[in-house]
Image 1: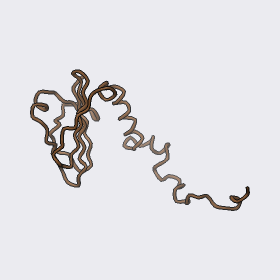
Image 2: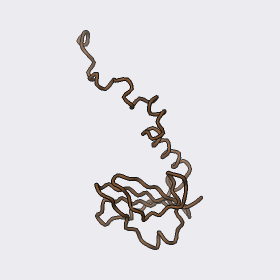
Image 3: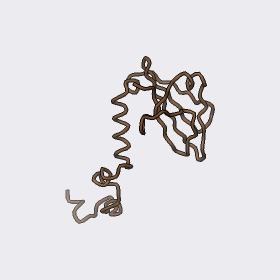
Image 4: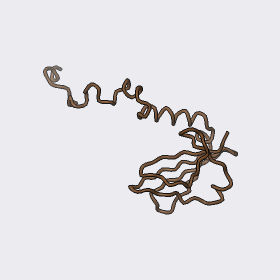
Length: 131
């Protein structure tokens, strides 16, 4: 069949621009790229057993814009907090959970972190118990 001869590609040229910031080479060069974000998340999953095999509970079910998921495996805990809203929001967590546990920032510098701190719109915070 020669039906395709002389035809143009089915995709428009607008998706094939040089230096558009989305090629793998360009993503690797930018520390704040989606490529590095996924690498960080995959490394976190690899290093934390509760993210691979632990139990899961949804904590913030109060119809706010904040999604709160707790993963546990024995004494190891990881808490995922995501503000899906358009305005700043504060997670509403059980004080027993937040006061009885020392939390560290698992995405940044592993410094002490409060799971109850205000989240900016579309912000993700992942905190966990120290290993």
